[in-house]
Image 1: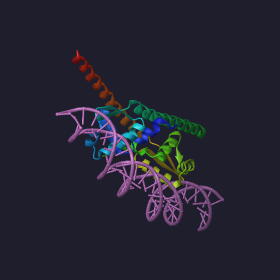
Image 2: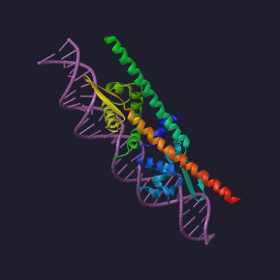
Image 3: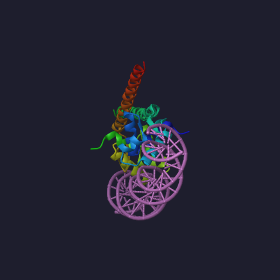
Image 4: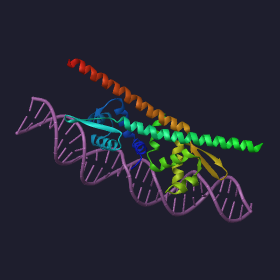
Length: 109
Length: 109
DNA sequence: GTTAACGGTAAGTCTAAACTTACCGTTCGT
DNA sequence: ACGAACGGTAAGTTTAGACTTACCGTTAAC
């Protein structure tokens, strides 16, 4: 099992995928709509959507001959959780550094 | 000028870079320390560090013949801001969808 | 039942970038 | 002053993956 938020973060590495996510954040769209809004072909969009879906960042539903994609809030939550974790580590790291520095000052006296 | 948080997010697309960031989150380290903790060569680490530095995610300082790298909190803040923005869009998107749905219900009567 | 719109998938190409080895400059210790 | 440790950079290789075209199945409209 791979940590969820970490590779979801990796999904946003590609600019086109970021653009898709940003478009879907504003409102759900069909594959064709996305393709028309982007400088790449429709199959390219389909492939990105599959990756995003596998990563848990989007969900889709059939609507006649079309397929409506929208962001999966859980995916965003997972990414934020990952960043929060990093943030926590950084804070405690800084705190330890500060404590060590003050110890040094004490010893200097 | 390119949006700050967005391409910082792109930097975490690479697994090795994510590992470096996670190691630096816990405590500052030298290049050699990072390389020893990772399955890639030291030059590879150097190259990743340059990318991370250009992206504003890490800062470094000379210490004798070594070079100490640590996370730049501003970088994390920027990434979180980006995610918060997406989150905001998703929320308003859902809200609009809910409103539209309730309007539909009204019209059904 | 036929046609058109929509979208997923397969196959192949091509480029970006992650990695290696080799080399060089700098700083410290002795 | 000399050697060793540390780390940045250049050059070259190789792989991942983003993209295209071509094709096929499905649904809906008429």
